Length: 328
Ligand code: TRP
Image (cartoon, rainbow, N blue to C red; front, side, top):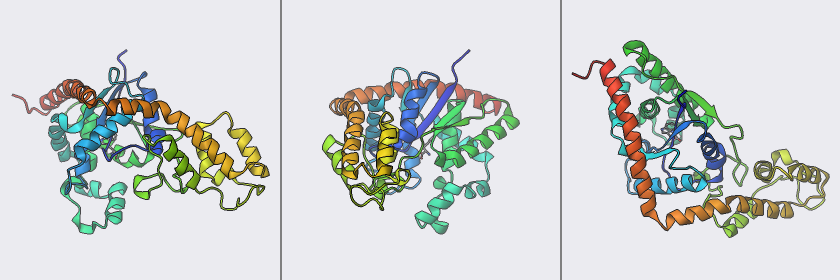
């Protein structure tokens, strides 16, 4: 039987952090052997809110791809490409935009949140409202069966599913209705215990050096009730404990017991955490540096990815034109 297809993407907004890795990227790396994978740098999506200053988009896209490759995305196995290199996305986006109402897009909780957070009120751009339609075009273009994403993307994916059903009903079965694939260990807290996010300044980057990691981990907030050595701690509310759970599974039971009894001091626990994180990220950091030093290689990978994505996109768009009677 033919392998099932996955498509996923990220907006290029610069270097990735440990939260992106744990929430999405590590999952992508695992899925590569089970599915036929397409991984997309969603540069047009950045424009929906970042249309004024577009100067960094190209370089940010390269940075994000370097993080993917360094973390273990294999460009021989998976198709790694940039959205704007495959123009068929624009055509499919236009056609799908006929199948979803403005009211439905306005009800999208992610848009509502952004409108509130960015203070847009009635200033929402036409393209911004269509964000999930562009995303639907990304996914349906590769006739994906599944989409590995974080929980925050579920409202968008629901719109993709509705559009796929609508299209199939009106014109004929072209698109599988894609399922979300959520990561089990989805959320990693930031250094301050809140959600890890670049805008919060609480991140550990995949590209951080050993020294940077050590410095950041030492400043992390732990259990506020554990002030001095000997105080019993509450691992369940400690972000350093969350890091140990994910990256130091062999020792976490022991650390937990020692923290609760008060034997384990936070400084030593942090030192151990920093060294575990640094060891885990060392191979990623090294591979990253190799790609950094050979950007031509990244360019070749993206050209090859664009060709392979384009082949698949051509097949889909031809099917779409045919069932919609747009081809003569
Ligand atoms: N909206 C996604 C994000 O913000 C990026 C994205 C664009 C995407 N196209 C996609 C994710 C298709 C999954 C599938 O991260």
